Length: 483
Image (cartoon, rainbow, N blue to C red):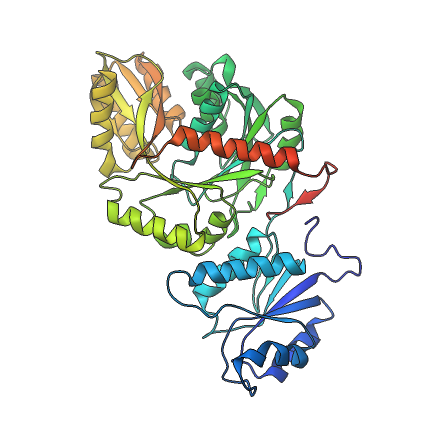
């Protein structure tokens, strides 16, 4: 599926129409006729409703509608219950594949298609890189550039603070330990003005990040975090804004792609930012969601789109008080209603200091929800042997963080901090001012409920490598969409 929705030989993109029986057929026929100056219709998907149909038995509807509209008509499945969403999604995805349509034109309306159903249909179109045209809106999925030089593994999220960078770092460490030459592309809200390379294998210290911060950089941006915690080569870029289907409003990722192609890699991790997705093709995709999120944000709206393009769903923060077993069960069930059989791996995060803090008085700084800080503090004490005298979840709340670091300057010997938010320009600066050591802290994902996170990482990376190896060669300048 090359190009975008305008790329057809006759200037009119191939389109399918979504129709229903709550509209009188001549009304739909007239609408289709008016739209033929813009689109070349190759079929229609009938979504239900029979109030305005004068036809006889249901078995004749598709044939009679085809004669009415002058288009082949496919009937969407009439189903209810837990499998209804999955059946409709499968029907739309297969219909798009069979027709080769590049545009979905939605001529339907409630009660057949309401808000929930429309997001479902939009998600299916977006997952195939297809432009969705509604009466008063359009959703155009962003084009994706194939890297071409190495397999790509996408790590995307369903929102901010779901642990996506921690999962990406874990993937990078596991694959690197297995002998892969790993490079990470990060796209942050505080990334550099021009894409840059950071050599994590050479080591990234607190002094390095302080120096970057003092030069005006956001030194806790994701590419710095990946380099420091995973010890791999990273490429940093920036983005602003995020659309429904993950497109940033503005980004420097396109300028980062030549950097990626210039460095040797056996696999490249393409890391999203919040719910935004870099405009680079991923041969396989890991989607990261939090069990503390609303189920609708994970499996509804355009979360459905993210699940449809995922090969693995990693659910983080799967523990009280963030989420209980019932909440986790509802989220997994909702994900499986959208994509039956999607591998789902529940996890929790645990602090992992990168230095020895045994027997030392520690101030611990995290972005974890305040309700979970006490549990993380206890774990840090038990496992590292540190005496945690200050524990703050205020890295993203600067006024509260300033109060916490003032206390830490008086009571702690060493500052243990995640590389996020104000970790460098507030925490590391306060440590330097007081002559305290800084130890970076990773959020280590740990699988629960018998899951095997390492095996899941190896499997999804192997899937990316296999798809890359079997893909048809294409020119570097060909831009593609999901599907």
